[in-house]
Image 1 (cartoon, one colour):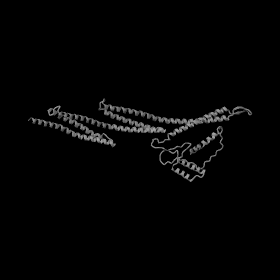
Image 2 (cartoon, rainbow, N blue to C red):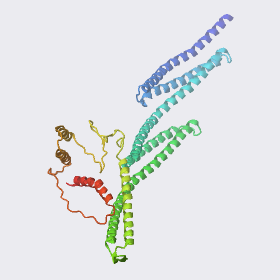
Image 3 (cartoon, rainbow, N blue to C red):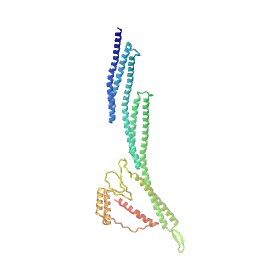
Image 4 (tube, rainbow, N blue to C red):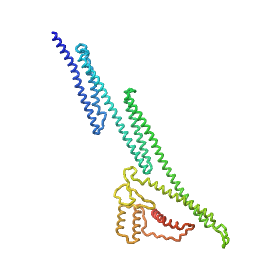
Length: 451
């Protein structure tokens, strides 16, 4: 009889254990279904990242719902399991501190741990969804920053080329800055929304706060740059006006120098021509001669005027080189095309920018395909005399003028020069050298200026 009672108790205990195990199995099957959905969501999002697909909040929806559902399953499982466990203890089927008691108490503790872990997984997924908006904003901000860097790079290139900075480029940087500020402000709105459910002293709250403060400093940095770019726009206007003013002064200075030079020359001629000083000479007696001191003073004044004119020409030459630096560049203003130069001659077979190296004293003549063919045919026909060479020059010049929309008579030019009287010349050798050196260039310039 005693054995029968013990057997019945053991059967009752086994049935009680089976009920607890059945509860566990039942809810774990439901958890497995939820875990399958969660794993599928994670795998799909990972694949999207590897294949360069955009991940949106909708892609997390199934995983979020499954995780929340799993959390509900775990909570229900614990409730049912704990109720049954407590009933078994109360009925004496499971004795406290027994092996079964420790086994199922550990199972409850594992459930509690799983619930906490699942709550953490749910929060991580929610944070990932929240970060999507922040990530998209940051990506857009990176594009804006890259666009601004490209404009600043072009401005640096233009500065290296000696070109004037573009007010339009500075204006585009200011507009870009407005868009960056708006983007950063939206980021801060999203970060503050995440802070609303957090304890202010928590590490997560403080981490978000540091991001917000960093963004606020970034906004101030952009605003500072915008003020500098706005001043740069004003500087371009000031520089343009200053260049106009400098040009007016340069023209006026040139006029004043020419005026002083002419007056000094006239004063010298006047001093040399006036014989108003009575001088006694042996064998001649008294005679009126030029005042040599006045002549020397006038000559010195003329030399000073000529010296000033020489210095001014050197300044003009320096300025011409400085101006040339603005256009004599390796690349175009955007740095996208390399400019080919033809200072040493050559044949161009491409369409695009090319560098010209002509000067007032060494002009370059540009022929199109038709003009080049005519010139080649002329050369091939042979030049039998200086007359042929003159005809070739006249034909080439006619082609150039025709391209410019001008006409010229083909008849030979005949110059008749009468007597030339030059008075007051002290350096006849220098004068003749200057005539040989300067007259041909001046004639060519006048020739090309006439309609």
